[in-house]
Length: 352
Image 1 (tube, rainbow, N blue to C red):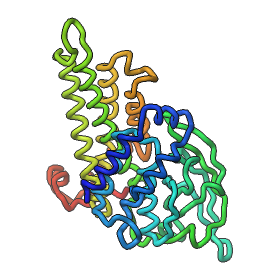
Image 2: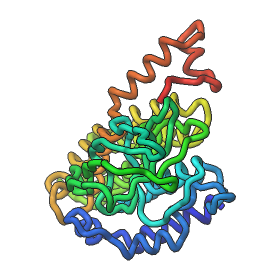
Image 3: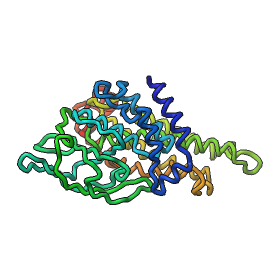
């Protein structure tokens, strides 16, 4: 099943995610036709349990779609929709279909007004908000986590964008929630910050694989002083460094995906996001050094990938934020030695 889903996504993105499509999306044009194909393929429901209408595959396999999307610099909220649908299903809320996105809900205030519940607050840097039908988030009501499904048409959205030109909008919330918009979350899923960090780690790993492939190809094609620049030791060293950083990031991200919805999730996602953030700086810089001036041009594909990984570093917690989480977990560990802490597969980790 994993091969079928991943092969389907690879073919779909390879055939339809072109340089022109990425350029148009960065200019503000939502690729609606491609999203229709993604929905028709059922990819947006891959993380939803079979009983709720999903594929019924292991979570790690479904989350592999995020890495593949990152490897193609997909300019659509597939990763966010995967998580949003899973959170909605976990709370027993209806899955509305369409494009969904996620946001951290700590800035929202939920207030009971008679029998109604009023939500208010300001959400910042919401991925693809203006292209989404709903924003899914988690906020506290009466001391318990609740899932909110906020219709974008009822919010005040202020357009903004990230370094790659992708929508990162602000949204002002001031509305009364219905039973279709709000439900208690029976069990914690790691918090929206942790779930967001997971998909950014996976997407970064995928994008860095594409960056490495482009860099190897360019180093083999570009001839200088009578031979391909890939024959020079300095370039080989840079490519080897990029390969190591990429492999380490993918391993960490896949460990976090394997621990999805388990007690170890908080610790593994902290490691994955901090590792991906550190690698993004190195891989992006070395890729542009290898490509030289052409890598900075609008006509070359490289910038679509490097700008994404640099932007993703700061979303859902930076590497500094997540390394602090790791440090707190280590300091609060009951184990006698740090080695025991990092090798214990049953470690609970810090709260995400």
